[in-house]
Every structure is written in structure tokens, then in C-alpha cells.
Length: 564
Image 1 (cartoon, rainbow, N blue to C red):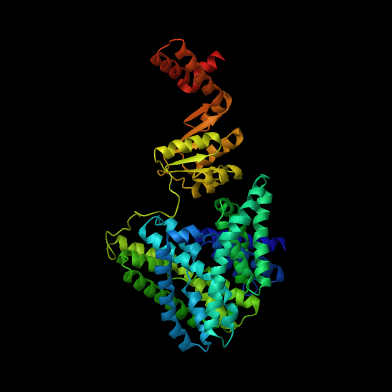
Image 2: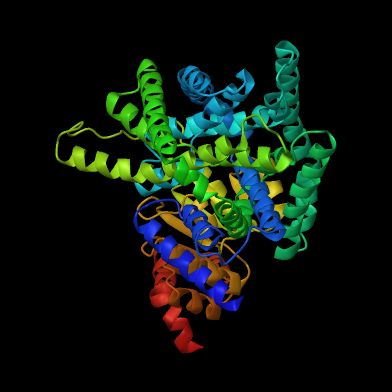
């Protein structure tokens, strides 16, 4: 067994390394590892109930992370693109796919509609990674692509709820549409109400414990509770995990939740792809290689054409329309999840063999996207395709936070600095791990979020990036946390100017050694203020006082250190 595990991890490492170099989603490496170590190739592992159970947890985590992206405020800000461009894209793909699928298969009408809808979905994780790698997230094309992905994620609610309907041969269309619409609206309203009045107070109580374990367990419990509740209502448990993510997306803890849960979500999601790979019947797929190849080509071509047409109709520039269509032309995790959920729930909307063929087509489409983009880049650089064309930066409200100053710590010092920045209309964001300070700050209108300032991922989430943020203020009252925060800031962007508070001279020296530009010791500075008032009242001129204080502050209070 130990040798089998060693071989498995060696294979997984090589595949992750190779696919990452090729800019292909690394989760596919685990799927390939599952295929290679599964019963049809090396035979190191069998698809046991344990693997299935781990895969099921992975599915829950993926639905949860998808739900975490559905923020009501974000939806409202981007409503025109989401419900215009996103809805039109899905509808156009379905209209083009439905007659083809219905003509070449023996599926029922509802089964064909379901497959058309899940193939209309693209890979959120893959596409966002592609946009980030290409530095396109903050362009017009990047925002429009993100809007489409958001609509697809939002569409997951009614599609999951309608799974039992898709499996039936007859149904009342009017009643079904009304039921699903009412349920979807009810869930979204429930997210706002429950998130604000129940989950926020619960998370606030948990954060007071200052326990990472309690924070994680609360997130896990949230996923499990909603999965059980929806399962008891006769709805897919996966929808409960999705709802749990939506609930937390409406809280001030969303960024910290995303950071804390990310490693576990990735790990369990890897188990899902491993189990999926082990379950691949390679003999069956080999017998149907021609169907899979034709299906792959048809999917990419049809989705590309549909998305390009929709984008051009909505007056998106040809260059942006082409690139958007190329990025979104693959299948996605949603399709894999829907097919797996049907299989695990015993829902036979389409034959199981056809479900495996569709799974193979979606997986291969994910792998072809980076290849197609590489060809596109080569053609564009050679001047054969859209020469000299580039996406323009957005002039409208950006999706991500873009501060000029980041304040780490939101106690009395952080609040005063925030007020000063607001008075000069300088955009900022503040971060604090004290929920009470965050809640109080937000009630007073400050732009403050809950998060760990010593976590590099949180800092990036809040907008810290090279050549973007002009200054960072470390206003923390804990010297050890301040030191870790400075190191995290330097890891993300080594050249940004950092200003810090310190309780005394010793802490000030430590922070300066860590790379802080100025670290002001509170005891010394308060003494300076008192001394300034005394000197002014005994008749010393303002110029002399300023010069005196300047000399005492030189070289990080070196004169005071010498006298001390």
C-alpha cells in the first residue's frame, strides 16, 4: 500500500508540474492521476466507497466556493452584463445545441434540454485563472467574461432544483417554471435575511474566540446544516452547499472564509477528480473515440460561434468578442458536477454510457482551451489576427477593490488615519481581525473588512499589488502580528512604502529592520507632543521647536537611543 501511495503522489506531482507549465488547470492533473492509477491502467487503486465519499465532500466544497462568488451587491452592480450578456450566451448555446443533440440521440426532450444547458456552462476556475495569467481581469473583455461566468453560477440554483424534472418523461411546464422561480427568488431573499440577522451574529461570536479551528468548524457546520435541510426538503444536497456559500458571501467575513477554506476545498476537490478518473471506463471510451472527438470539436466550435455572435450583437469589439468566445468555448466543472450528481442520485435523464462520453468531452475541452489560446497568441503576434488590438481598461466601477492605501488594523489609530484619507478623498481599504471593530467601522461608513493582515492571500484579495498601492499603514497593537504583517506585505510587493505604529523604541527598531519606512513609537511621539506644548508656552519659537523635533526624529530616533 505504501508503495502504491508513493507512486500515486509521484505521478500526481509530475502531472501538476507539467500541466501548470502548459497553463492547464492543475485539478485535471488529479483526474489524470486517477485514470493512470485506477483499475483500467496501473490498477493501484479501486474506486471504493471511501474514494466516493471523499469525492462527494469535494463536490460539496466546489458548490460552496461557487456560491461564495454570488454576492448580491456584486450582482446588482453588474446586473446589465450578467442578465443581458450572460443570459443571451446561455440561451444562444442552448438554441444551437438542442436541435443537433435531439437529432443525433434518442434522449427525451427534457434530457436534451438539460445536456444543452450544462454544456452551455464554462469553467469558472479555469477561465478566471486564464484571465489572471493574461492580466485581463481588469479589462472590458475580462469584466464581460466574468459577468457571463457569474450568470452561469447563478443559473446553478434552478438547474440543480430541476434535476428530478429533467429525469421525468412528462411534466407540467407552467407549474415547474413557477415552482423553480419562486424557490430561486426565495433562496436569494433567504440568503440576504439569514446572512444579515443570523449568520453575521454567529460569525461575530465565533471570531471573538480568536480560534482558527472554531472559525473553520463553523464554516463546515454551515455547509452541512444547509445540505441536510435542503436534502430533507427533497432538493439536492449540493444546492445546500451552494446556498451556504451564498450566505457567507453576504457577510463581512467573506474574504477570510475564502482564504481559510481554499486549501481544504482544493484538497477535497482533488479527491473528486481522482475518484472521477478512477471511474473512467477507458475500454468504453476507447470504443467511442470517434464520437468523443467529434463531440469535442462540435462543442468548442458551436460555443465559440454562439458566444461570438452574442458579443457582437451587444456591440462588443471584434477582438474582445473573439477572445471572450475562445476562453469560454469549453465545458466546465458544473457539467461534471451535474453528471456526477445524476449518477450518484440514481437520476437517469440520459443513458450512463452517454454520461461518461459527455464527461470525457468536457474534460478534453478544458485541456484544449490553453492550446487554442497559445495558437491565438502566436497568430496575433505574427500580425495575422487582429494586429495592434488590445483591450482597454475599465472606466466604470471595478469588481475588485482598488485602494491607494491599505490600513492593517482598525483600532483608534487605524480609524483616525481612515478619517484623514476620507477627508482627502483618497481610496483606501482597512483590514482587521477583530469582528467588533469591523462591524462598528462599517456601521460608521468606513471601508473595513474582516481578515488576517498577516495572510498574503487576504492582502491580495484586498487589492495589494505591485505598482498599484501607494502606501500601507500597519496600525496593529500586537508587535508579533505587526512583524508578520510587514513580512507578508513585503512578500506581495517588496517596494511599497510601509508606515507603522509601535508602542516603544524597541518595537520601532524591529519594524524598521523588517523593512518599514517609518515606525512611530507612541510613547516617544506622545512625549514630543507634550514637550512641544511646554516649549511653546515658555516662549520658544515654532521654528526652533520644529528643528529640535526633526533632529530628534533623524535616523529613527538615533539621538534618543544614544542618550538612553
